[in-house]
Length: 409
Image: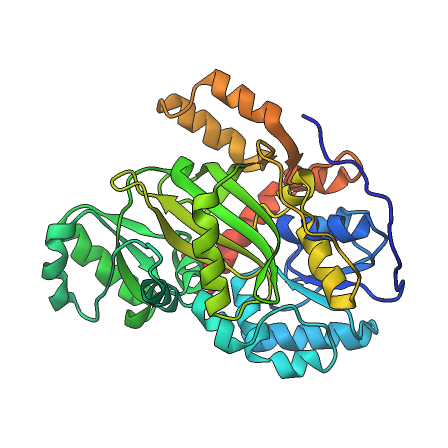
């Protein structure tokens, strides 16, 4: 596996300005590496011990009390900014709840920082998936058929459409409560039981019933873009070839760039309609029944595998940072056939896929040979990867304890 080389500094720099990244897991680490390799200072804040502490490209890592609660997150960002004199630094959220918090307190944050998050009038269309799907329908963008059920009495009307997925309109609320992205429902009994279970976890208006598009992660694709002035500046398309779980993947484990012109036009129409600015990932799933790519989700932030961009020729964090500071950048388009791997989760995922007959060993080895970057390991910054393996019991314990303390076990 060949991994990304160090990139020398280029162009003019204001040495006192940098980036404040919220979240120190592998997406935040990838932002730090993108900018740190260009000698741009990076401060990371997190509410737990993160792997970014061990990165040579993180100038400072600050532990704060909470970056889930919107008010506490913004309070922490403002306090850290003032404490370390980070005025005019560029903000990089790595979680959807942070995007929402920044969007709703844009004026407060913009008085001190350079904010890359759009205002709430834009963000509401990606935060709440009910808004996402309703806008997609207005724009004529294909999406899975979705029903909005307000009481158990309405469930009988859905029996002819089983199997279905129960999924949240606001994914963070459901995910933090259950650890799942969605629930599959095959029978009327399951439909009633799981609907009632979901209603105990999230608000009724956040429960979506959605048709299940056949196929697993290998049918899922993404359009990734730095979008400004009503058009795409730089782009990357990718296939999510492995994920866990297979059907409703919480996260990708192996992703590979590809040419997917079929999803570009719809993605750009959606982003233009909401007056978007920044970096985004627009997710689709190809429906084998009609061959159409159906819109699943829009991430208005640094997504999990955005580090693939640098290996494929599109450095998303730097493009956004440079735009905020007025540095000139050339438009770019990702090369095809470049892989991104998260070895910690891909190894068990691939092994399970091989046992179940979804993947053969030769295909697995070929994918590994195409992986040009790993989510955490890098030759010029190896310590976060070593730390992640050593601290794995801590991270698992922290995840379980957080759920329990929130009443979400």
